[in-house]
Image 1: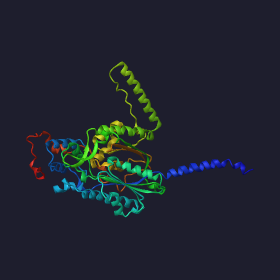
Image 2: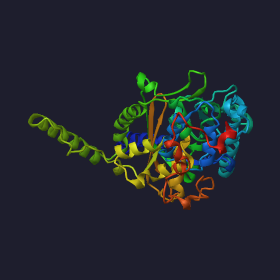
Image 3: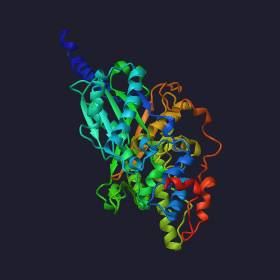
Image 4: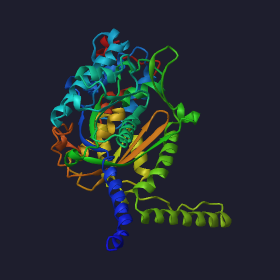
Length: 478
């Protein structure tokens, strides 16, 4: 009888066991960033003001109108003088920079792979054969064997490694790669993943005169990043960040969104990257839809309630205003305060207009936007890897403290907007040996972000198409 009196404990103990098991399994499904390595190309690939002028002038397909357009674009781009271009662009032979080959693109990627992967694995103490998952995203270079296969061959990785080689995903590809890894982590325990993100510019450096395509030459620069992720409990103490949530938005079903960013050939068959005039509109739509989904996941209830109430009040005021007057009331602004759930903002450095637009939409301060602006100035738009340069800036400035929440926002062709939230799991003191900012972080932010292009080339604005001639100092390039 005494034994029977304790039988009521059995279901309680069983319930506790199931709860413990559920919690324990969730711990094995976490996605941690153990370390990451940004890529800083060699100094001989820097695009100075002088080099920019030479790159433009030696394109025989450009005239005064194109020169004036490019000058206006680069002056307002927010890009400085120390960004990097593909090595083929510095070739002295027109055959090299006017007709880059497939091999030029492969060599550009291998230079990045062998520098950054080697540094990351060496610093982390991880053997290439310990890697369980490899995800490579290079949007505008598809080769056979794949770039992922080249990495596996070079580092002699295991035969059972799970491999994903992504192309065509655009500037938002690195978060897609992270999403792939975190979904694998939900099924497989104790895994190490290597994510490799970059862009191959060599075969896509445009040499024609279509303004919608030469604009990309002003914005895109060489760069890349390699991230080591894991769901191993034994590595949790070494982790830098923990993924909280990720949201992907795709507007490919809209023709105007689908066509606003596209790799294509111009009428003369020259390959390049087309940026349409409706790109800002497409980006805004995708951004709004993405925020609508991720906001409830990352913001506190009180802020969501405040936002809902503000929307209601605005609707009432607008209705009353329309009844009594034809004028619209702009006194009430419905805006959600993302700083109630986010401490730091990693914004894709797609250009000054992109950063300004996100800053305005989210009502961010200049301090919030500083990491993105500095990254754009120092490294340019490095496509999918740009988010990690922004993160590295925050780390180098010692701004990332345990418990802080980092919000990443990226845009990409398709058209896509992807975002995610990370939690900092330990104080990051900026002493990461692989931080690309470590040698010059003290000089940022500079007193002025103005570049010297207008000072050197401003005279072009006053030229007339009927009488324009290049100065003698540039004639040897034509």
